[in-house]
Image (cartoon, rainbow, N blue to C red; front, side, top):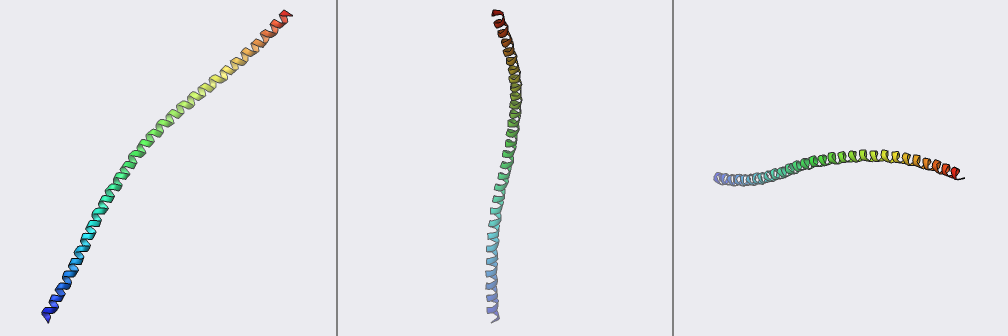
Length: 106
C-alpha cells in the first residue's frame, strides 16, 4: 500500500514537473519574442531619430531659403518704390515741359 502511494505521489510529481517545464518553455518562447519585438522597436526609434534629424536639416535649409527670398522681396519692393518716385518725377517734368511748350507756342 505504501509503495502504491509512493508511486502515485511520484506520478503526481512527474506531472507537476512536466507542467512546470511546459510553462518554463512557454515563458522562454515569450521572452524570445519580446526580445525580437524590443529590437524591432529600437530599430524604429533609431530610424525615427534619423528621420527627425533629416527633417530638421531640411527645415533649416528651407527656412534659410525663405529668409533669403524675403530679403530679395524687400529689395525689389524698395526698387519698385524708388522707380515709382522716379516715374512721378519724370511725369511732373513732362507736364512742366508740356506746359512750357504750349505757352511758347501760344
